[in-house]
Image (cartoon, rainbow over all chains, first blue to last red):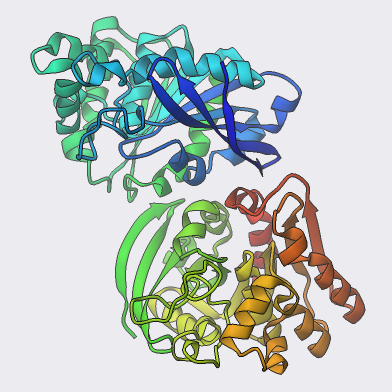
Length: 281
Length: 281
């Protein structure tokens, strides 16, 4: 496995880097960012995955979420992948919520998407292997978080890989893609409108109902001034399933906060502490 | 004085807003950002001005510097202006270091620049009056900081208005525009190549030597991996003048840090604490 350094900069005593590699799973070149805390100079450190939302790249959270300060203090490596395969040879769509920038963290099964759009396998297998070969990362201690579409990615990747990730959290996640316009569009195109049986495999609410509660607390922050709250995000659906299956969840409704990175930055410290606790006990 | 709200978002218990107004001084529409800390809901709070560098707008520091957390805690209002007049009717230059995005915080005297390029008067007079009319801001308690070209702006605005600003700090400032290529180009175009007597009025080193030490500590952070360190920034020039005139300065050379916002974010807390101390004693 090879990679290329795009840039590396000092950040809170550690190193904030951007990297590029050829992804065999996605069939294209991919970029990602890695924050190495000062502790990584001395020993392997746990990894926190941060999955971004629609239209984002690896850059948005890296420059806007402000995770480096607390990641430095707690000794966490934070990895931000891109949100989809990229490039002229990769299928795309003019809409912001489909194609490049909108991978939905699933493995597509429909033409033309299935050749490249395999973000589920990329995030679960290929990128962790590369990151732990490149850096002082402890692959046995991983947790996952994300925002919006990336919150959906974090929840579903966690629920289907409970031995791989020690903890999960999310900012304003799409908790039920089968129930909202963003998700219904993506699932019908990536998986096929006639394959609704497969859809539940990428729906956090459905997975929790099917597989039962996980043995961890799930932390979710949701802004009450978020314009997507009622039609796309609907955290009450997740809350209902958690109550039904006995899942421990902390769903915090934050008054005055919208869907932006100003919201994420305001609460990122709590999420890093949540994961640090799970990763060090 | 009127203004338009572009957006407002919750941030660390306060409000991060973007605004637009018609500037009489600059003769164009201007944008700026204001962070209102929670304390501003109860009483007037001090103002910290953050002046950005070449190519930046009001947005860069607002989303990347991470000042909101500590501004919330310390009760500081942080205002980020744009870096020059803007618009189709405003003179420009194809180079990144001249014209729009490169106002150099001076009042130009040469044609075609002098009609619009009056960032010195805009930052010193027009924008503070507007901000204190709009928000719970205490105009008698103002401090100023900035990055690169904005560090030059902060130092020169402070040194020429010692009763207006309580304190000053800078990240990787251009300390002597008369001595570096960026500055020599800007000063020769905005003020005239033949008017070198006027140049010293916008050179922090020359102002300090001419007017003597200010009665405050000046805080400067400079990354040692900054690619502009040797040819453009030359902090040793400022250090030498400070020694000569007895100016109290804390110049911290930070190993491994470059010219980016990852550098600024790493040390912004120290700068906010520096200003808070001066603004509350």
